[in-house]
Length: 63
Ligand SMILES: [Zn+2]
Image (cartoon, rainbow, N blue to C red; front, side):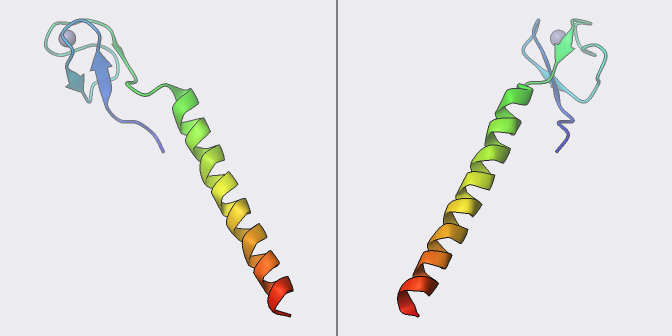
């Protein structure tokens, strides 16, 4: 997922512009650090793996 919104550090505003804040001309940055989305992706993967492992376990137990 690509974050479209940028956050201005100067006036604390969100903008769709990627180069500079349209309000004050201050520098903008992506509000969510890339690390967050990576962690989230790993978390989802972990949950999926856990679910698969549990389903496998249940199948083994019921067999
Ligand atoms: Zn600004």
